[in-house]
Image (cartoon, rainbow, N blue to C red; front, top):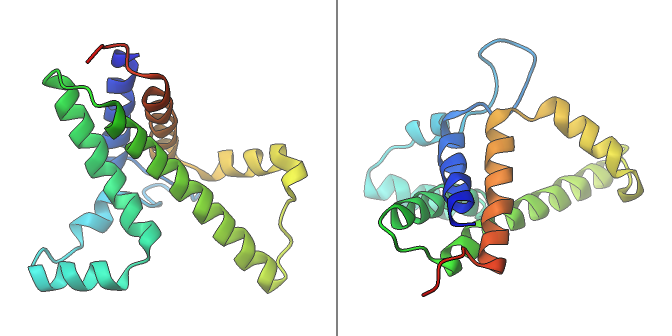
Length: 156
């Protein structure tokens, strides 16, 4: 499980540089690294960004830092079950929260949304929209969450 957790953390970090959405046009889509590159790294600008951003965005960006920290510590031989749990749990939590918020927003606007009884329809629509980065990040998060719950196979 330790090797799998290492690969999962690496997938989450690498997903930072991969496209997250398939918009049908070459070169289009959301890449998290582009968001980070566009930030002004001065202290005042970062404080302003943190205070004006939604908590979900901040947790989303923190998952990359947590995954990188887990990866570095695991390479050094210090596997942290708690860090795996927090990293995977934060990512899964952000997805659940964002999905719920988007669904509620669509319902408030009167936009037809597939019901929870039709999870296969939601999965089909998501598959066509999500890029490789989203899949790598999501799979890595689920594996890290499971590694945190089950353990990494190395005794402390």
